[in-house]
Image (cartoon, rainbow, N blue to C red; front, side, top):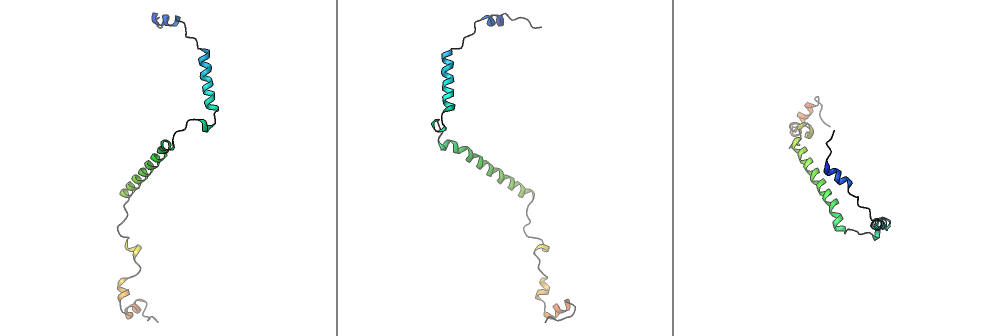
Length: 112
């Protein structure tokens, strides 16, 4: 149970300010005029002021992607040179050998 507060009781007994009908009507009329007006009649901000937000978001996105790619490259570095199985097309010893040696490697048949 709350203790009665004498100050709150006195404030509750004060007369409430009545809403001025004329001021309320004027405010309502101004609000309706703004919402009912065509878009061209409303105050517009210059393009310079509205163009900064998309530009800033685009730059932030590029910075974010650049940082993410940099971290992925740091975590999973690419090899400097491909492994021998990827880049090897044949034995360099066989390619430089005499034709007889190549024929021996193919079962003793000479190349035509």
